[in-house]
Amino acid sequence: MRAPPETGASVFPEEDLRDELVTSGEPLIMKLADLLDRFDVKPSDRAAVAEIEEWFEELGMAAEPTLLETEGRKRKLTLYMREWGPPANGASPEPVAVERPSDEGSGLAAQLAAETGMPLAAAADVIGQFDPGSDFVAGLRERASEAAPEPAVEPADSVAEPAPAAESEDAEQPARPRRRRTLLVASWVMFAAGGLLLLEAGITVVWQEPFSAFYSARAQGRLEDKLERLEDSERARENAEKRRLLAAEKRAERPGKRRISRKRKSEARLTSLADSFSRRVGEGKPLGEISIPKIGMKQVMVQGTKPTTLRQGPGHYTGTTLPGQDGTVGIAGHRSTYSAPFKKLNELKKGDEVFVKLPYGLFTYRIEGTKIISPDNIGAFRRAGYNRLMMTACHPIFSDRQRIIAFGRLEKIEPRGAAVL
Image (tube, rainbow, N blue to C red):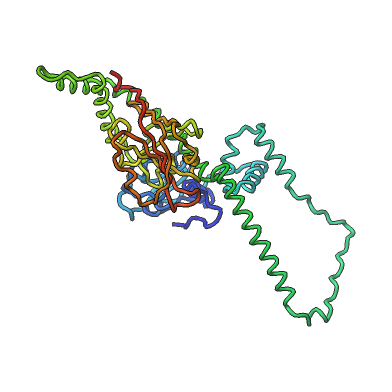
């Protein structure tokens, strides 16, 4: 397996692999473990492996055998572009002419890459999302033309003047001035590098880190589609769920037993649906939506808090309850990268609302406050005697020394789907 490039690598491993395929014009033969290492995914995480195959399909790539069919970490597979067709008996197919971007397209991508620091391939993808006549592309075109150097034209009759002969005194001068010039140049380089780092930090604070934000935006788009399909499948299950719940309620109301109040029925339904839902949703899969109007945040949240999972959006701590179950609901999110959903968590004040929408209910929490804790303070998630929400993120921004927690109390539940009596 060829090692990934050390410089200019994309934050999307699948795009790096595509670029390697296009550049070489032949398939890549690699071990399953080596391929999955690029994505920080284990072969046992079938859901994450299936997600990688979806990304490959979006980029016109395929693996033979497929990632899910490949058994064992040392088993080899062949990665190729779909337009080449599957390799026959592992042989390399004839390279196919790949459509290259136009000169202008390359120039615009180079301009955007220079302005943002993103890889050239990612810049080309971003530009491809805009209409050629849009203000965004027009502005890039104008800045690219301004940045283009004027062609140097040598006069036909010009004659290069001979360099002046070195004077004997120069040879006798000590090397100190040269060292001073070297140090001066080095100082300017270090100053410029420091300025670039400060600029990068400023961009990250104001606009979020550009590479990971683009990655997360793509992931959120996929999650929205999956959440829509999840809602459809939950609606398809609704009648069966209602029949199951009604049967359980009838058994609980047998003659001689105390009649169950409507409120208790609703609570029992929500708990049963939450229990069932939590068993069906695996790591990295969409759960529902979380929105915080005060800080302008609304995203699809996912199950789990693995690093690869949190790149997609806010993640539910699997060791905590889901809304509808009694206890503490824990949700984690990034503050400076991957769209930074919890960047402004510190701005939440007492009384601010947080909405968590799941297939079986819309849950409204009212913020009670925020606090800073150490990363190993697991006691923060202990039961509080009431149903609450705990949202956590690293603190301060750009550091994982501490954690910031915003906590709120469950205030209102609007049943949805099978939870509606």
